[in-house]
Length: 388
Image (cartoon, rainbow, N blue to C red):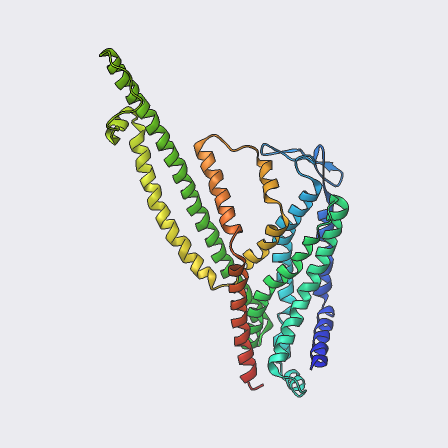
């Protein structure tokens, strides 16, 4: 049994290596790493080959003292190379290369010859699925090994955690490849399976984008609420002090000792009479509370829909979570602003990043694997019962 399975895997590997796209993708991966290695940083700022770039970017000074070379290359790998190359371009090329595995298998004459051997249909389909994952494993493995050397040689940091990209990216690819296998089995067409998989991936991307937008809006409103509440509290404190000073001035005129607090406490009307901005700021706070409730409902609804789908983006983001020192990067932004609106914006952005970046691992991978298991199970059921 194991010999048959290994023979099928070797056959799948040879089939992939025989395709020009396999080597094209491999060469492109090497070129991307070479570009990656051309970037450098020194005490004057960043460099690209022989060109020295300015050290100041939007008021932030970036040199080898503020951003160590090792951290620079790790950040570039997890924030640029992985999200744009490995999770998009390489995955698309991988789907193009592997989309025809199932349609080619069930073509007339091919499937009969394979099924004539003493091998179960379910094991055959799973072996083909694993063989497809082999393509992405090789691509990401080569890319990660080269990036590891660049980070070690150029950045002086041997980041072994870079190799986490292999299981993470392959896991993300497996979600989409499972869909492609099912669609290839149903349509018997490589082009149809590929296009429909891309369409479903786009739907997942749109849902993910909607999730990010609603979380950002919700956290931004909550940050504005906190800032607005602090502003109102400050205004009320100042207005109370004005009323207390007036009250003590009256007591002093009557020959009485000053008091430390008003008794009874001032009413909202009393405070608003001393600061006309209080009424408008309280009205704005009420609007923010109403907007927060609406954003919370949208956020919960999209989150529920997203729970049923594979988490392609969150899976990729695990690499950044486990390899990049966020606190070190945040220190590059300088001290927080004293302006209320700017502080609210910064707090909202940080809260959004925390909410999206700290989601539990069981939710990201558990629900995604549940989706993948369902899709593969459906494909195996169809493959087992279909009369070829």
